[in-house]
Amino acid sequence: MTLVQYKKIIQEALKKYFKEYRSNSSYSSTIWDSMEYTTLLDGKRLRAIMCLETAKSLGVDIQKAIPLAAAVEIMHAYSLIHDDLPCMDNDDLRRGKPTNHKVFGEAIAVLAGDALISFGAQLIIDKLEAPAEIKLEIVNDYLKCAGALGIVAGQVADIEAENKKIDIENLKYIHKYKTGALFKCSMLIATKLAKANNDTLEKIGKYADNFGILFQVYDDIIDCTLTTDEIGKTAGKDAHVNKLTYIKAYGLEEAKNIFYSLKKENYAILAKLGIELNIFNEIYNTLEKRIK
Image 1 (tube, rainbow, N blue to C red):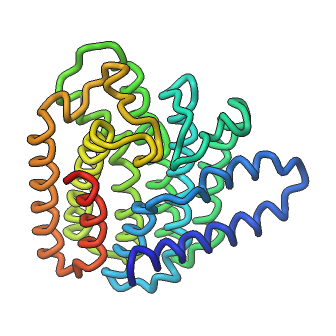
Image 2 (image 1 turned 180 degrees about the vertical axis):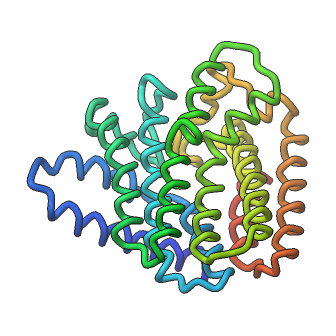
């Protein structure tokens, strides 16, 4: 399985679920149009792919994990819609297209983000084939990630840090939750679907924590080295609003060193778990091509 093949599976599943659920809606199609717009925009699908690959590596049939991967991608879309709002990061572009509020208006964008959170949880409940106690634990992890113990916590910390001098620990906190929470959730819920032991859960959790930081370092690097057209969103925005980034804190070359150090540590974790490296290699190669 390759990244391209995984992306195709995820995209087809998302389209299928949207078609099924919106057909049961008795009211305006506007909210579904808005929900679909951001969710189905072409993206890397890394979180959903990592969910599927984790499940596969731990012995779960990929088809059984698809509802989880779709739910992860749906939550990611919610986070993007809300992150781009004028009252948040106020961005006009996402994945090379106008952001959700630019197309549907701010009120519908807010509601679409809200609806996506519940839609993802509903998919897990309706579509996941798993014992009730495991499904309950997975839904709990999923909703925890979406709220004040996850993505929202990071977003609030990010807002409160604007135009303030913060230290590196505050920066790490912001990105542990704003960026890293969903990476961790995507891998842990797949691990729980596989009924893995606590040692495996701990190692997967550490891998995901590292990857969340690594991905944010990558994002900070491309924000200051690539153009808006190349990254699909407004480049240089963090510097413009004087945000602390890994580039500002450490410099470009040291930020790259952090990226490669975390990658090395994660390879060691995968080796201990006996997980195949093919897809993870492809993910890292995809990121590295843009930071060299």
